[in-house]
Amino acid sequence: MKRHLIEDLRSRLKANQENEKTSNETLESLERKVKALAEDCSNKKASIDSLKQRLNVVTKEKSQYEQMYHKAKDELEKKDVKLNNLESKMIETEYAMTELEATASRQLHGLAKQTGQALETVQKKLLLTNDKVEEFMTFVKALTRELQQSVQELRTKIKQAKKMGEVRACKKGLSQESVQLAASILNVSTTDLEEILEVEDDEETAKAKMEFEKDKEWLQHIQKLLEAQFPFASSLMDAILEKLNEKKKLVEEYSSLMKHTV
Image (cartoon, rainbow, N blue to C red; front, top):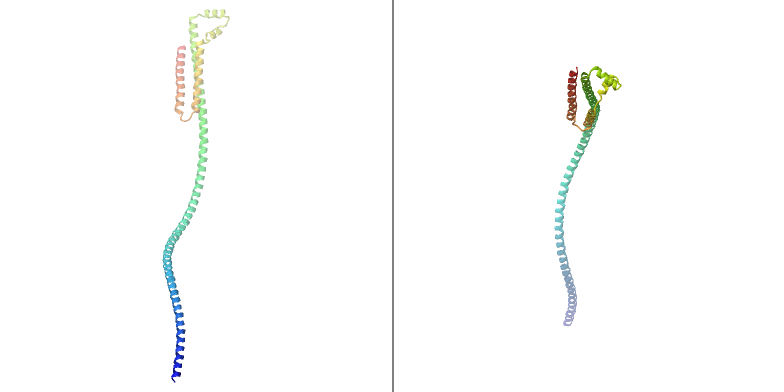
């Protein structure tokens, strides 16, 4: 019985040893697994910490982007409002411009019509004025020619009156027989003798030539005044009055001669 008991105990001991060996192996395996799991957990923890940090960074960036998004959204909404207002104003401006162009077109059309009528009236007045100016020029030229001719005729009459006075004075100093004797000596008639006595001397000829040149210069002066720019009425009046005064003096001189001759 002791033998059987010892063998049984040995068998159990052997079995326990084998079980202990198996348990130790299992324990070592579990320890390795635990160690591996611990390392894995440590690595995962480090990875989780890294992920947390990245998450914090991403979250912070997300927050910043969200703020930027909301800010951009607000600005975009404001710009949309401004754009809508601007589009409304542009539509109103285009409508106002269209109305303004239509009004301006009507006014320009009316103004062009009025301008055309006014221009036509001005052209008619200008033509009439030109006709009047031409008529005035013709009148002045005719007046100056007539005045100059009148003065020239008065000069001629004064010369003839002076000659007649001289001839008559000469005849009074000579008897009829002396006149006939002089005519017979010269072998001319008494009438021809009177014409010879009336012949102008060199001084009178020079004076007549000078008067002719003065008349010519006066007519040229009148022509220059008519061709000059406005105003020339005062100068023209002075020139005509000058010739009228000369005529007045000649008329007075001629009247005086005729009184003495009579």
